[in-house]
Amino acid sequence: MARLKLTKQEKSWVLYDVGNSAFVLLATALIPVYFQTLAEPGSSVVVAWGYAETVASLLLALLMPILGSIADLKGNKKKFFIGSVGTGAVALAALGLPTTALPFLIVYVVASIMLNGSMVFYDAFLVDAAATDERYDEVSSQGYAWGYIGSCIPFILSLAIVLGGGAIGIDMALGMKIAFLITAAWWVAFSIPLIRNVHQTHFKERTAHLIKDTFSGLVRTLKTIFKDKQLRLFMLAFFFYIDGVHTIIKMSTSYGTDLGIDATQLVLALLVTQFVAFPSAIIYGRLAGKVGTKRMLLVGVFAYLCITLFAAFFLKSAAEFWMLAICVGLFQGGIQALSRSEFGKLIPKEHANEYYGFFDIFGKYAAIMGTFLVSVFTQMTGNPSLGVLSIAVLFVVGFILLWRMPEAGK
Image (cartoon, rainbow, N blue to C red; front, side, top):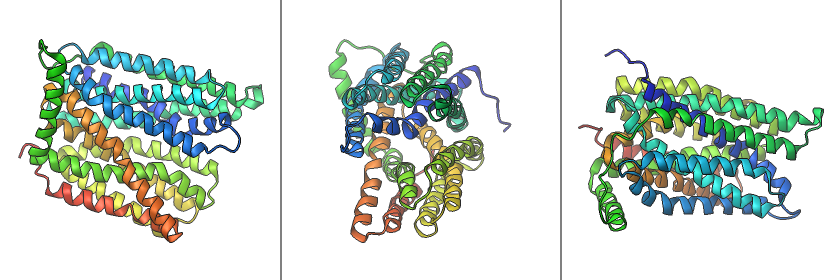
């Protein structure tokens, strides 16, 4: 069957990935560096930042299944989406106001919760935006692809202002204030098409007992996930392999630093990953349409296992780090996009927000095991390469569980 062009609704949905990814990239590369300038001398920046991320994740985990269930009610999904984007963008723009660490962390936690909350509602809009279930892989992959390339535009502009602003009298503090405003404006601008053109077509009818029905619905959803073999195996597989993916993303920079690779090389390699991921995610989605989503997910998990082995045994120099960045870019977007679309095929559409709330929890909390394994094995052996090698077990377990999962629709 010939590949159809994206519809107006699908394009509008894809564009939101361009908007939110700008904040994600800024938070990965520049915000932790700026936070270090606000922290008290001698204080542990890693500990403070880690606690902030943990608090944000815990609050999100508690709130999203509940808010997601309420958002599934007729007319609610877009309201929740607008509220999270609006609040998050204001908080992001306000990050330039605090001059000390604690107020900055509080505002950042609010912005981070709103960002990740909006992405749960956004993921759930996939079932409304895509014309058919068969379109999920293509549309989800396009979202990740354009998100990778689009996020580079405000990031490079922000990077130029922050790092090169001294030539025109802009210090880092002022440069970051401008970067926060640019990124917030970008986020809002690319949310407008979704707000205007994508409408909630799958929903639950309103009832007289909102709170009671919300919590009973959550319990029912959890039971369904663990009774349904497809959902159960997919969620367990996703929990393990996405843990490995997130661990590589989070630990690659610190691992490169331990190897003595220059910080500039690390930032440039991060940008290379974004550019490589753009076409790769699109190609991945199209291949899924030809050979099957599950098969392409298995390819991605196996590729990440190979990437882990390469990092553990062969990564010693900047050139090899660049090779690693390119390899990660080839599979990162595809494995994330197809995980999102495969999940959408397995769930009841009228409960999409509720289910994606649990999907987000599995994705967010998966990052705990990998970083723990790396830290423990590195500390035990004194060898960071063996610490990285420990991540391989996550991909092996994820691959086996995914292999055992029946394909969607079978």
